[in-house]
Image (tube, rainbow, N blue to C red; front, side):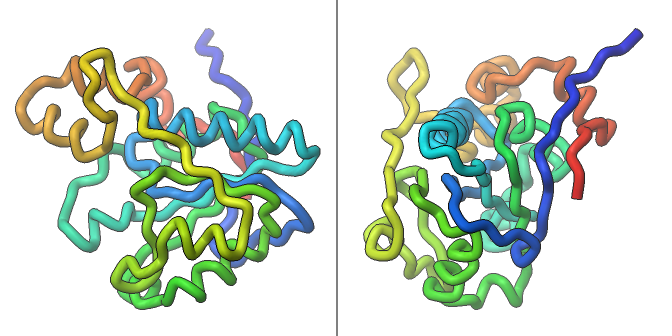
Length: 199
């Protein structure tokens, strides 16, 4: 008998969740690789310490897919399943389309303000809003913002979705999977849409 983990994470669109307090992380999370996992785990731990829900705010498709034509590393179903497996209470999935792309940095700050973050975890390269005008410094002027240092592999190189995509393109699949940090059985499970998240 095939046993899958029961996941209790709730899924919302960008206007579907309002909270009086939260710990939040924001990113494309394409592939939910080991660097992303560190951000999400930091957010979940902060939420537990603060006694508030943990929230992951992400995008579908990943912005680079629309802006640069990059092929996503995971389907949205697989991405949600991977994020959910890390234990956040909520995932907000913003539809990244032409209309969303022109939203300003202040528009975005107002969006994430719906969940009243007491702390926000981001990567150092995180940018937001039209023309990427939103910076970590701008976000920090509104919320307690923590920047997680980049996660590096054994060779000292930074783990990134771009690097994983390049490894896959070069046929170095095992290296790419090692950086992602997910097993094949999990991939097969999540590709079937088998997560148990609720809307």
